[in-house]
Structures are given as structure tokens and as C-alpha cells.
Image (cartoon, rainbow, N blue to C red):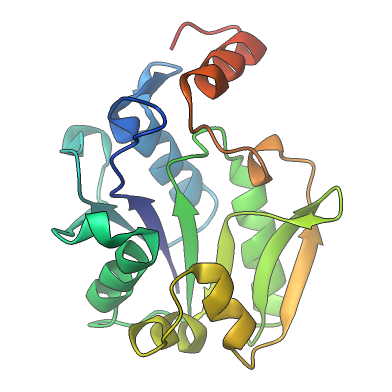
Amino acid sequence: MIHALVLAAGAGERMGAAKPLLRWRDRSFVAHVVAAVRDGGCTRAWVVQGAWPLPVEELGDATVVAHPGWAAGPFTSLQAGVRAISATPPGAVLVASIDRPHLRVQTVAALIEAWRREPAAIWQPLQAGRRGHPVLLPWSAAAHALVSPAVSLRELMAALPHPRRTLASDDPAVLDNIDTPEDLARLLAEDGSQG
């Protein structure tokens, strides 16, 4: 089993708005990411909620994890999600954020397929020579977030003994965060949608 952990707790300060609630293609950002991870093969989705309420009616069977300490940073959101998941640990955890509502289902499916071939490895998509997101962690790596002195996912992965693998991807969302109003305008213009 592979569970998805969708990080949606931040305030969206650079966006100046509640990022989980922003609309694209007639759905919220968070609903798009949940759909991508579920349709891509994750058996369960967990969504970490913090600064803003979430549109639970759009999230299907996803489990919402309230994180009152969200202001302490994204890594604490990862820790809150891993703590919730730890009651029924899966084989792996796919960590995704709502910064990428345009994440392709195929990207998720390809990472899961790669992990099944080498389940001890940490998997990331690779584009233009750069590692991107989402990140697929074996459970033993994800669980280490609860005891690690790391302050970011990058630091956590660098400190782990797990092999790190990449998978070539042409998905623009792999490297493309939608963090500002300009990013959102570009996404909408490229897509031809109005939000």
C-alpha cells in the first residue's frame, strides 16, 4: 500500500490567498492534488490542514489531519501527517503539496511503478537535471521524520541511508510551484481556463 500525504497547511503568504481553496478547472487546488494522487495509484490520501479550512466536500475519502502548529513550517506539516499515518503504516508515502495542482496522474503512477521495482529507494521525478516533486518515500524513510533533527524534507532525505533514485519526467508540475498571483495567472493562461 502507498499512502499520499498532501501538504496543504501553509498560509499562502506569497499568494496572498488561501491556496488550498484557489480554483483551477472548476476545482480547488487541494482537490486536484488529491485526485491526482488517488487516480495515480495511492491507496489512501491524507491532507494536512492548517491555516485555512479545506473544502472537504471535494476531497472524497481523503482523511484531513488538523495541524494547529502549521506556522512552524512545512516540515512540521510533514511530521503531523506521518504521525497520523503511523497508526496504520503503509509500504510507502508519496509526499505532494498543493503548490502543484497541475500534477499529472501519470507522474504519480510512474513513481509508484518505479518504487515497486525498488521499494527500499526514495524516488523523485527528474526534469532538466533537477529533482522535483512529488517525492515517494519508503515507510522507513518517512517514519524517520518523527525522530530526525532535520528541518526540511531535503535535509531528511540527505541524512537517510536509503538509496535515492530519479525518474525522468516531462510533467511541468515536477518543478513548477504555483506560489504567487503571477504563477497562477501563468498557469491559467497556459491552460486557457479562468480558474
